[in-house]
Length: 196
Image 1 (cartoon, rainbow, N blue to C red):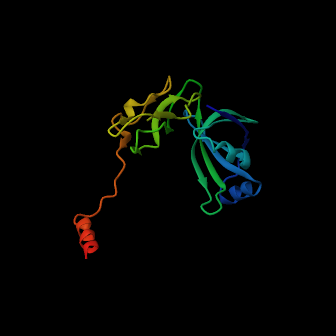
Image 2 (image 1 turned 60 degrees about the vertical axis):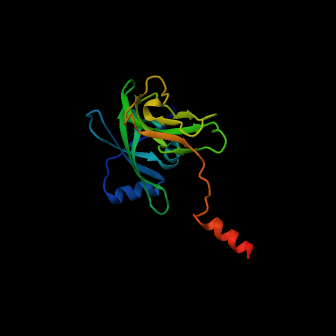
Image 3 (image 1 turned 30 degrees about the horizontal axis):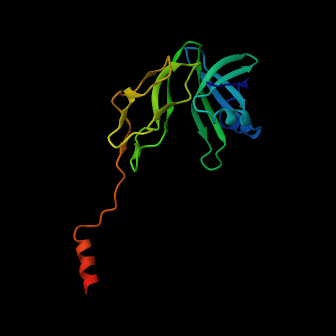
């Protein structure tokens, strides 16, 4: 799990006007909360934060005057048109603490013949240590044929990670490739017109 260091500044101005002023300086207003601690209002560098948020479940080490914490992004607000970051909610985490996160499910390998993979879940909810969040879980379908099914409980999760969702949830199934069948009676109609 990657950990990104970001310089953080405590802020004491609030409201829309203060937030606009922060954004004009290419920074992002943020809130850090959790563990029953007092909520901290922060200002973070926009570009560095944007790069960090490209990694799912990234751990952010906030460093600055009065701030030295590890956090997980919990809520990200973006401008709906321009896409820039407007505000970020960060959840304070401690080393050794368990958190529930969504990790991606990746399919590897090739099925037999014309069988295809019908993937129902692209992410799965797991409980894991906050500082060791897995980047994802793989499902190998190499050599599998129609009828192969994987439920959440069948996933080979990394050590220290447990399933947080429904163990019976269907992750994927291998199905026969759909065939293009002619509507009933169409073949006979073609044959009749060809005979004329």
